[in-house]
Length: 315
Image (cartoon, rainbow, N blue to C red; front, side, top):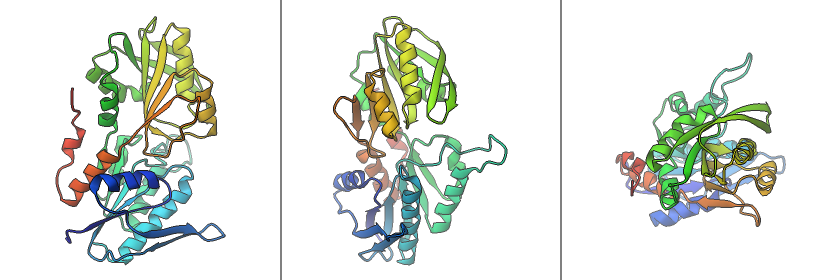
């Protein structure tokens, strides 16, 4: 394989792509990615990539379908330009919530997306905090699955843990929350919730010590912030002093920003796997995963192990 590599990006998260290139000390590849008047995506790679190791950075956040099509077309363009290997770097893997057939006559869309990525010509996938880890098995190509926890812990390691309880906002997130609780050496609790519709969640009960304590909620993603804000409201009704949340993917829409502005949650800590708007009066802290992804790209290019990226310094 040619020792050269190139990094390109679509329109979903160019700021993160540039940060990754800055970390690696390489220029961001020159590519035209835009749309025709009827909405069709158009891609042209503006430089020679024959025989090169190509990395295409694209989160599949809102608009998910548009960003997915850009990614598929960029992969196809790179394949037809004779790239030796194409890695789809997907910081946020959309459609991950549709990972099983839990109702009659519904698709398994995350498997469909995996098939389309392989069909487009991807040689491997690099992603962060999949909603369900079994999605790695949907691919017939290598998947490097990173975790945002090293970035989160670097930020959280200086907080006061003496009066802290860590909560999962639902039973399904207990495994991730338990890992954080073990590292921080704090008590663990969880909240039972009931979803009334796609945008509304009702927190109905909790297990754990809350009276006079600070609470850290751990989750992999938030979109409407319904789960987080309902949990925060219930926790404060049960005597919690402050409630803040650490979420890998802040895929926030207008409803989510409005709920955060209402004030039940004291702070949302998330990463830039997707673009996050920081607005006055809304307590959001955005951490960068550029070094994590940049180091992974460097190691993949050199055919080195990425296992060391799971280590958390200072713990």
